[in-house]
Length: 297
Image (cartoon, rainbow, N blue to C red):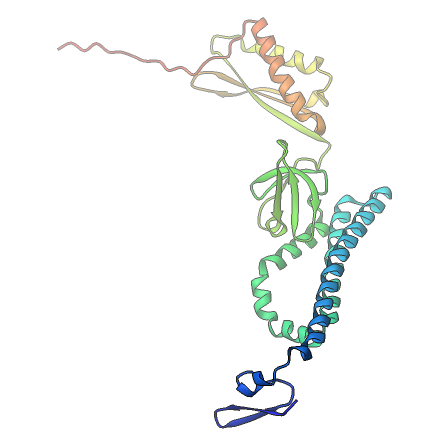
């Protein structure tokens, strides 16, 4: 190919590789046949690259599933399992993409240099992602909760199903999936309802001012003594907590197993209602006394 000269201002840049497509002589001498082998070769490389990426991502997903099964079989920590498999998956995908970049003929040294030059801007753009990664590491180090714990943080509550590199996945009792960035764990308070083996049920039972206070307390005590799901019966609390505008409020607090919390709470409310009805102890409605004064002229 003839040597072409490109002029820019007063500078002259000579190139023997880049054709001058502005020059009319280039198009007169342009031969499509010369570029067909290059086009075919590039097309084949592109097709191979797409196929390798597709098959590679499938193999990586299968490998990660295999790791999960191995960890599960050996009863590995579920929290650490999700985090490690997520890291392995992302690293393998990055290596696969870099290998395909090299296969296409793009110099990886130049690629890395470009990434390095843009590192500051990328770091600022991905600052939230980096915070999420750091949050995931902190969750693994300090373990405020683990997989299968019922927790509340960042305004959401649910059962922890997976702790990934960047996110924590919760399942709510009504079967919704919530994905929370790990950085939120360091910004908000975390309530772990599964951390302890026992939980306390706190109820406020209101009775009328005309009802027998001692009788109501005796009924509640009898429920504590006879209901088998209440543990540490001596630690139960039955006490007058408030003289309200419409009712006398009794604090009723009992200890139960963590897994029995909601079942016992619902059963206690039903049991108290039935026993109080049988004993003619009322649950007063909100009421207000109205005094009418008849003023005469």
